[in-house]
Image (cartoon, rainbow, N blue to C red; front, side, top):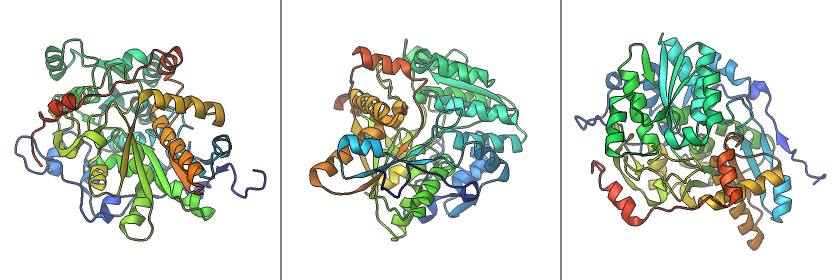
Length: 457
């Protein structure tokens, strides 16, 4: 290893940081389907969306034509606190696996919030502040997004109201307390604070919640308060746009040493990390300039891409949000309470759904216990305790590296390490105690949930 010319960590200089976000929609021949007004069935207008989202974010959400969108200087200044983030060569992992594959990971956990979510949180908080708003509302599942947004809102002096999926609220008290440290108020969802929360509790007594439930409550809280808007940590095109800084930095670091990846892997819940990581590489593929293999890795307990249906569906359980065309399990789908690995959303980004439907992106699902086996192995070998979400990508990267060992192929694998797992120790404890189980929904359960979608193709 001492003779390798590639360093363990490839750092970009501050001046090499992206000055623009990359909008992959500009290079997509088949654009993602538009959001629909659930009342009229027609595409949502900017005016309609502005009642829920910040004006500038609405413009970004509807922008399918501009390839590059400038990053405001205030956001770039904030990024400089933790960006550029390192691209790490996993030499120790390669050696331990005995694989000829070369493995790299883009590490997004070197900031206080502990994950990639801060890349979009600071952008959305900036636009809310610029618009003169008092505060924002949001949902969070495992807590990474809520943590990031509370930090961003604190920076800009905005009020932050977070509805946290009840099972995560109970399993991850320390993540909740970090949000409160940054000044956010955190409510377990579904709750009795909102009308939609009360309705969900009446329909599903004792439910442990879902991201769809929490989204419904957060949207209601935003539209019923003056000076507030709703912000979302994944799924929406604007979020994937902000997260493109991950892929742009990754590509710049690889280009610096003349490295071309063969396989790019990311965990997939709503799609923000994966979409951001693959963005510039997918752009090259769409333009016919290069070819790559992209793999989305999702949990077997919430398999929207691998077992969902590509139709219009509500983005939330309470059915108060616009309809999005996406691979979905149905907005009423609630993952099993024993699912501790994150990535709990019932649907997938419209951008990624379209790319997957066109065959430009692969998808695989992995069982929870296999994910934590990979997490523990990676921690012992590479020295970083990974977030459960990130560990889905680790699992797939290890599997691909072992295939290279069998075939003797020297492929270059890049995966996204979205964050650290120091607030996820209850899940690790379950794994180590042998109480963690794998729940995989039956075909009947998924079919019954999908049958409740609006049926719009």
